[in-house]
Structure formats: C-alpha cells, structure tokens
Length: 449
Image 1 (cartoon, helix red, strand yellow):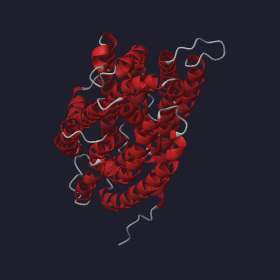
Image 2 (image 1 turned 120 degrees about the vertical axis):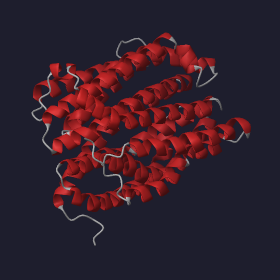
Image 3 (image 1 turned 60 degrees about the horizontal axis):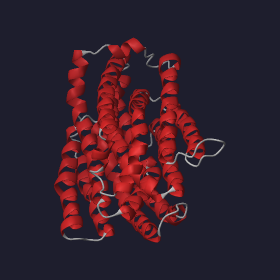
C-alpha cells in the first residue's frame, strides 16, 4: 500500500489551493507586519500599544474565521453535490453572525478602550498609545468581517485567486499610507499610532469593496446577489448551528486564549510585550503555508465526501499528513534562519531584542508540531464533519493545561519570560499525539444533514 496518492487530480486541486490561500494569507499578515515594523521604527511604546490592540483584532479574526470555516465544512460539500442554492443560504447565515459579532466588538472597544487595554497591561504609556490606535482601527471590524465571509464562500467553491489579488492591493494601500501618516511624509501630518490605524482602516474598506464587486458582479459559480444575504433558511440555519457552532466556539476560545497569553506576558513588562509582538507577527507570516494547508485540506475532504467518493478519504488523509510534516520542517528551518535579520529591522532595546530572538527560536521548534496537528485536526477532521472534537481538544489543552500552568509560572513561581513562553507554546507539540490517533482512526467522517 503506497503512502502517497498517485492520483494527479488530487494534487492539481490541493496544491493550487494551498499556494493561493498561502499567498493571500502572507499578504494579509505582511500588512500587520508592516504596521509592526513601521511603528517599531517610530516608537517602541507605539509598537507595544498597537500590539495589544491587535490581540483584540486577532480575537475577531479567530471568531470570524470560525464562522467561515464552519461555512466551508458545509458549502464545500454542497459544492461537491452542485447545490448552489444551499451555498447561498449558508453564506447568508455566516454573514449575519459575523456582522453581529463585529458590531458588538466595535461597541466594546470604542466606548471602553482604557478598560479593555488595562486587561493586558498596567503600563499607562502603552495604554495611551493603544487607545489612539484602537479608537480608529475598530471601525475596520465590520469591513473586515464582510470581506472574510465572502472570501470563505468563494474559497469553498475553489475560487481563491480573488483573495490573493485583494490582499496585494490592501498591502499596497496600507504600506503607502503608513509611510505617509506614521512619519509625516509627502506633506502629510505625522500621526504615529493614529496614522497606522487610519492606514489599516482604509485598506480594509478598499479590500471589502473589491471583494463585493467580484462576488456580486463577476463570479459565475455562486452568482451571489445582495438579496440572497437577506434570506435566512431555518433548515440551513439549524444545520449550520449544529456543524458550525463548535468551530465558532473553538475559534473564540483560541482568540481569547491568545489574548490571555498576551496579557500574561504583558504583565511581565514592556519588553516582553514588544518581543512577543515581533515574534508573533513573524510567526504568522512564516506559517501561512501550514494554515493554508488546513483550509485546503478541509475543502478537499469535504468536497470528496460531497461527491460521494468516501473510499478516497483514507488515501487522501495519509498523503495530507506527509505533506503537513514536510511543511512543518521547512517552516521551522526558515523561521530559525531568518530571525536575526528580521529582528534587526526594529529599533528596540537590547533586552527586547534578546527576548524576541529567544521567542522565535522556541517557535522554530514548536511550529513543526503546529504544522502537523493544526491542519490534521482543523482541516481533515473538521472537513470530515466532526467539528466538536477540535473544540473539546482545545478546551482541554489550552484552558485545562497551558493557561493555568503559564499563569502560575509567571505570577506564582516568578519564572523568566522565556520559560513562560515555552509553557504557552507546549500544547503545539502535545497535541500531535492526539492528532495522530484521532486522524488515523477515521471515526471523524460524519453526515452533516
């Protein structure tokens, strides 16, 4: 029995999906990295303030991403069965949920910025810079959500190039406006943190506008109309709640957990905040292929089941696991080799530089586990219809093990930021053992009717 599938159509579907989704994601993360680098050149305090606000943005990304991934589990199967009407109905439900959540988060951070940021740090200078950034950038939440839901719907029918094109344009807009508004170039006022926030908001508006034009005017697969998003099917809604709720909850728990991780490090000083911001931003960029492989795997597995080709699930799963491991090895090596050059771009204190390099060294090891277990569970297992398992697994590891131990290490045992960081990332290796057993038992293939 061969480990790797020899069917060329499998690779012709998988690799273009991974490549384009990865390119789209890398551009999206480079936008955040550009904010980090430019604010780091402007002021370490501004960098730290924006970093805390980005933890809130990350929570929104995880929740909206969960809504999108829950959609993909269903819409990819509908695509395999050529049920376009159900794809439209599922997209309408995802859009409604996403906009409600984005609006609620906007209200919370706009009206209570100081209270929200004080959850992460007691540094008043950092809170002040973060407030300036947050009260502008929060207006991007709804635009970001609409764009993300539409792109998730298009991705489920294997339309991914538009996402890459939109991200490229967004990157250009963001970097150009950062250059103008952070430092006061080309006759513009130097606004620092507020300039970065205006640049991000403008980029989000532009990308949403382009995606809407494509989805409503150009796309010929779904042929979505605005009126389609105003009709909620009770039957599809019940189905989505059953399938999608665990994915949304899992995303929300993960987003909150990352915010708590930032808060734990944030209470260890401004240097730890800045170092974690740098390491996290770089990590997101170099792991885009791993995250793209999860999305691609979910589409491939769900579509295969929608087409009624259940016998192909086992060989596809074996091949995907080999690909995940190779991606992890390459990503870890890349992160390790690039860390010095990237940290050298920042105008930071020697202590922050040392911590950032140590954090990235740790991540270059744990990313191998991330690149295997994350797409195995959130891609293969979710794509097969078992959406509850990942939620339960994250609940046990993150909330039952990692966060309690890390909090005690930081506040009770007074461990160093590096040792606390190791505790925070240990689950990425531990989850691999669970993933190997779960994936290769094949009990995750479920009906979603």
